[in-house]
Image 1 (cartoon, rainbow, N blue to C red):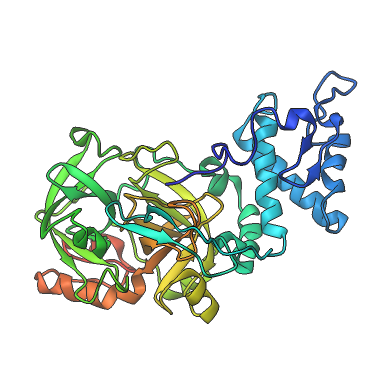
Image 2: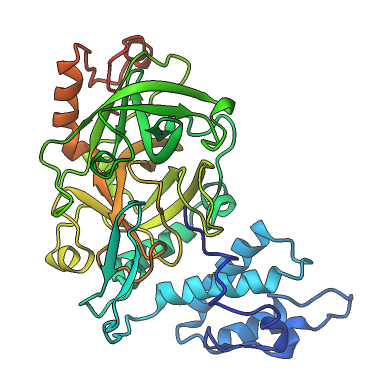
Length: 412
C-alpha cells in the first residue's frame, strides 16, 4: 500500500497552516483559523475560520459548505482537534477535495524519462514518459465524481484506513503472501480451500516458480507467526510481459485450508456498480517497508476500461480490467496479485487482482493502478481447478455446502 494522507512531504511543510496561508491549496486562511473564541477554544473550522476557508472556493455557497464540512469531519475522525497536527491534516483533506472538484488542467508531458520501479513488479523497471496531458488517474472526471461519492460513505468504511492502515487479526484472512523458499514478494487471495488467485507476472518475474509457498498471517517477514502452505503455480498460458494481458495465475495448495473462509467472487454487475475498491496486500508502504498486511481504499476511474480514452491514457485492457487509485492512495511493489474488493452491503467480495501501474503514472507508486477483473478470467480459473480434480461450485445460496468442498470456488 502507498498511503499519502499525512505523509506526503510535497504537500506542506510543518507549520504551514499556522502561518496563515495555504498557498499550495490556493485557499486563503485568515489568522482567525488559529484564534481563540470567547471560551478559549480554537475557532478551528467553524465560525470565522470556516468562512475564511470558503472564500476562495470557486463554487456555490452550499457546495462550498458541504465540501468543507466533509473535510472537517474527515480530519476530526482521524486526528483530535486539539492535536497540533489537526490543521496540517485538514489542509491535506481539503487538497483532496479541491482536486476532486477542480477542472482538469493540461500539463506538458514529461520530457526527461525517469527510470522507476514498476508498481507491483519488484524486479521490473519501467521508463515512465507519459504521452498524455493527464498526469494521474485522479485527474479523470469519472474518478473525481466517484471521489465525491466516496466521501459521503459512513465513516466506518473510509476514515480509519484513509491513506492505508494495517490489517488487524481476523480481517481479510483470505489475503495471503505468495513466494517461495521463505521469501514472499507477491500477494494472493484464497478463493477455495485449495485455490489461491495471484498475478501471472509473479511467476514470470521469478517471485514464485512452478512450486512455491503461500503464507497465511499478518507479517510475512516473520513466517513463524502464521502458517506456510506449499503449492504449485499455474500461470495463464496467454500472459506475456510485453502485453500484460491475462495477468492472472492459480495456485493449487498441497493441502486444504479449512479454518480460513475463502473470499467470494463478485458478480459482473457488482463490479460494474462499484465506485471504490478496498485493496489489501503485503507490499511496500510510504516508509519503504513491506511484509506487513495493509489495506487501503481507492476510488475507481474505470470499471471495465470500455472507453478508448481510458485505454490510451491508462493502458488498460478493454472490458477486462479496472483502473483505480491515485492521489497517493495506491497499491505498490509486493501487492501484485493481491485482492481488490468491492463492498456489497458491508461484505467484501473479490473483484480484481492487482496487476500494474497505470500507463500515465509518473511515480513508482501513488498515481493509480490496474486490476484484472476476476469475473473475466473465471472460466479459465475454473478449468484449472477442474483439471486438478477439484469440484467448482458457482452457486452461493448455500455457503456451508460450498465451503465443505475442498476445491469449490464460490461466486456471489
